[in-house]
Amino acid sequence: MACRVKDNKINSVIKLISEQGFDGLGEAVTLLINQAMDIERSHHLQAEPYERTEARNGYANGYKPKKVKCRAGELDLRVPQVRDSSFYPSALDRGIRSERALKLAVAEMYVQGVATRKVKAITEELCGFEISSTDVSRAAKMLDESLEVWRQRPLGSYEYLFLDARYEKVRRHNAVVDSAVLVAYGVDNEGNRRILGVSVALSEQETHWRDFLESLVTRGLHGIKLVISDAHAGLKAAKKAVFPSVPWQRCQFHLQQNAQSYVPKKSMKAQVAADIRAILQAPDGEEAQRLLNKMVKKYETSAPDLSRWMEHNVPESLTIMQFEEAHRKKIRTSNIAERCNREIKRRTRLASIFPNVESCLRLVSAVLVEIDEDWQTGRSYIASDAKQ
Image (cartoon, one colour):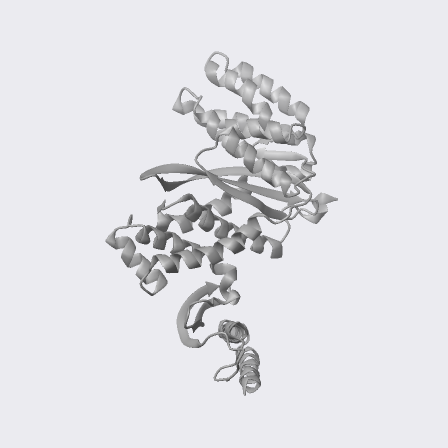
């Protein structure tokens, strides 16, 4: 009976695609995922629907409707349920880990009594049922285990290491504090980008950065030729301690932003930006240094603070002159983190204030896992011809 049902589903998929082409792809994917979840539930229960067997590990409990957006469109899924709530289909793991983590973050706020009626309403809308501390604890444990495996996975050789930090509000001891989220990105010898790790702590002090970088080395990170980041004091000190012989490239985008705070007049800002851009876009290190010397002298009288700042800071953004020209565009800034930061912000906006560090780390990790998976199936960050 079960085989006949599966064959009917497959035949329906084939018919949809043959009759409707790409227009029927969303419905075809829906059928396939629903079937995959049914099969997985049967494996979990160790029994087919209505099958009587001593090996049965529980009982089915109908389905819960769920809409999931993907590249094939919006899918109307039927998520199989079991009576003891011990089952969650892995077919849904990819693409909605962050959604599950977000639900848990909001649910934790409610369970811990720090949420308003508005949060309670959001929780019920998101989760579809009344939340209990037991539900939250069990769901968090299951998700945390899979995310911890990803965070502790072995690393390998990467040529370029990008480091970035952002801040999220986290509740600690009845107070709300800004906690630093540190993320490491790598580009390997083939030009492929990966997310290497993430950590959440109170600040960007050297201790946090050093522990984070040391954890990457412990997991096998090696072969680094260049570290790219903004000029965080704690990061620079930690990098010097963990990767003392690896050169550092200061993010050119953030350098340009930092420079504006040393410009004394608004009318000068555009010209200063153009002058610094000319230095950064020089064809080689010798020309860049010539232009830098010229600009330092140019602003000695009209903007002495800017002149001194340029002399000591701009060279930190010229390290890429030692590397292949074809690579420079991709390694001159830490913009590799832009999409990740936008997606993290989009997902954390609803939670607003995380109830604890674990909740923050869970949601950020879930978002990064999904992006990392997309990167593995996408095109190279540095094209193969640039790697030759």
